[in-house]
Amino acid sequence: MKTLVKYLISVAVVLSVGCLPSSVEQHRNIAFWHAQHNPHSIVVNYYRFADEFNAQLNSLSDPTLYLLALNAVTDAQFAWALRLLNNDQPRAAQPFWRVSVAQQSEQKRRQLSAQLLRLERWCDLESLKEQQRLPASDAAEHLKLKRRVAPQFIEQGFANDEGFLLAFSQLQATSQCQFNVLMMTDHRQGISQLNAFTQRYQQQPQPRTASFCFSKPIYLGNTIDCQQQPGLAAKCDWQPFITQQRWPTGFDFIVMMTATGSGNVQGGIMHLNSASHYGLFLHELMHFNGFEDEYVLPIAKQAWLCEQRGFVAPNLFIANGVPAPAGWTLSDSCQTGSKAYKPSADWSIMQYQRLPLSAQYQQLWRKKISEPDYQPVRFIDYFRQMEPAMDFIDKMPNKNIAE
Image (cartoon, rainbow, N blue to C red; front, side):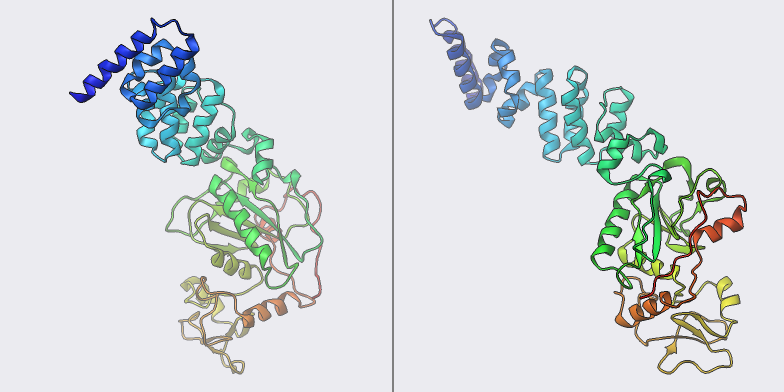
């Protein structure tokens, strides 16, 4: 009852103000004053000074703006939606911007899409796109990445700003490092994760400075087929892909980041998913230089590896009839009768990836890549086995850098 009385009093005041010999500006100021101090008067005041109120919607209090939105004032509905999004309430905001977005300028729709991107409301961005209400913007480009569209449909300026590449032609290896690595991904999250790994590696290069140089992430989108089964090893179908590209020279390894799948290395190619932690990345990087896992190896691998004798990796020795190196201890790698030995009794990063790289294993790593005749398995070796007629821009140079 008190609320109704206040509302009627406000209406009476506003109407009486209209009869006073005052300027329009005075009337408007009084209207704003009443709207701020008595939100229930907002509807009457709004329709007397609609343009002025629309220009100052962002300065209205929450109760005042909310009442205008409830009374189907289009600009107020949109402004209220933006305010809710800014307060991380996307579900509450959705009905308000959906009924008002068609009447908004491109600039305001760009503000909406930026908030939806911040909150990763991909379905809402898709809805805007389907209604042709999504303006050209970073949000529109991020949505393309989310949908894994082909690289040719991504704006070059956006890729530059976000720190990734769209073509191999934009790549150039550096002679400053012993190994150059192509960083690739087929999806949006992989771009930021690869950049994060590179940045962290540069803060503490392993096993020494100038061992590895990493390219900017190369976005492949749907031009490569990668399996999407979380419980299996991450992998991509390189067979058709390798004949469709002119591969850049001077690169030794590939890191391919998929959306799902467990990490692994095969033939100079590392596959891992974008939820992987940095320790796994470093673990797989050591596989590039011949290190073996110190947990139980797959049966198929044990069948041939564990039948060998002597050093099969910098960190693994198979003792078939020969004594193990002094100080080395049993490893879990081989379970088929042969005994495998590792350098330390402690767990290492090759047994449990979340452990830091120890000084002992760092030294083993440095020693391995410093061997004068050392030649790792590079991705081109693997590709040449798959497709002899590959199109390389030039022959891969042989690089060895002494410590």
